Image (cartoon, rainbow, N blue to C red; front, side, top):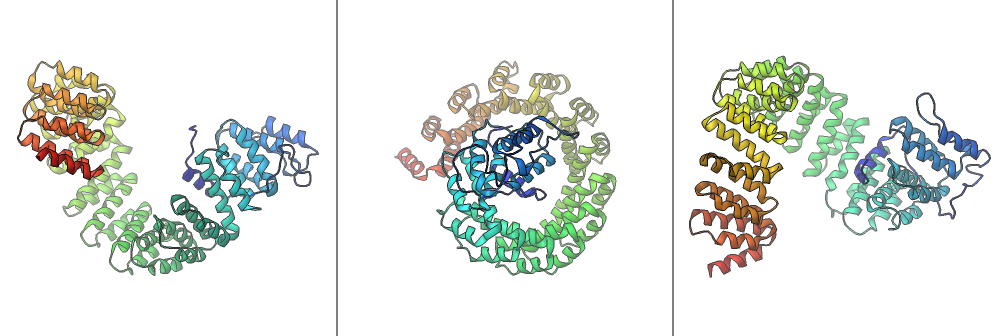
Length: 570
């Protein structure tokens, strides 16, 4: 497992262990790493407890943790090590959580010191964070002072520890936790800490959490994210009240996000009631977001009902998006019914997207049946879009089946639309095989299109090999068609070398490659890119190079770009 563990992911994991309350509080610092106090943990049966923790397992392959009443520091650390050595599962985390809850908060610090001294093992950071949370139940400020010491773990570990402490503190005294967070320097760390306080309070009192949030200074970034835990929790227990408070928020992104959270949570419980509520909202983005969330969730349970509702929505982006969502979810269970519905829809962008959603979902579950259906569709733009979608799915599942299917399609645009994504995917693993196929099975423009697909993908994976192949092509027209793709790929890592390679091109091919190179070169060395662009003779290519160079350069340093252009004019 990777050394770094996502702070957000672990924090979410700790929150999710509702069964085992993986929260820990601070203890006053105590010296030594020997046995914990006899009064709290007792040392009388330490050896038997340690033996049980480290050496035995039950029939379910879960080693017993030491009895809370007879555990010593050695036994507890042994239990942690034993848990970290086993596959991570809910039972293991629940047992460790129970052990941590049994520890007196004042005895936590020596355990943290010993656990941190161990070699890195899976879940160690999780258990350390849980111990910090336990410490915080007794003395959160001491726990925070210790956790913030640069000597105690990596930056990621310390952030996780602080988050765990603040959450534990806020669950017992949100006002005190808020006051401590507000004295932090403004910035992302304070914003994240305050979000933790609000989220913790929302678990038990969403009304108080909203009041706290509204009392905070308006400065800071991403404040709208604070509303999610409040209204998610609130709507799960009292959707009507949560909906009323969300609707009462001032217009803006926070208002719209809150409505969407209520809608999504409520729809999981009672989609009909949630839908009726959403229809009472005023027209606007908030209402659209709410409707989309409700109908998307509802479509998982009753796509036919939602398809009927969709037809009553006014034409526009909302109906198009909802239609595509319904089609995709319906197709997972009954693709032919979903297809029949989408084909009856009026011709529109929404209908096209819905059909694509059905075919994509169908191809993931039954690619052969979906491919046969698409092959029998009437020729036209709808079939061409469907062919591309199915080809991508088939190529990902079985390349040879995809090729066999594509070659059975009628010659022309339909077959080409199928072969392009298949050959592009093939060239990721076997570009030479894809090239042989293209030369053996295509001619003229069709072959040129396939070779361009291959060269583009090959140039990204192995530009030197692709370049050698292209330069040895006997046909100059084919060579000119594929070289710009490869040179553009080389420019991503070595624009100066790519610039030299353009000397083998001429006409439109050279112009296209040069424009691609200068755009990428300007990001790393705009002066060098400018010198190269200025070496071109006056004309359309030079003008286009200057335009791309200045546009890219001005994003990072508009003053330098303007000075360069001024000096050029002089």
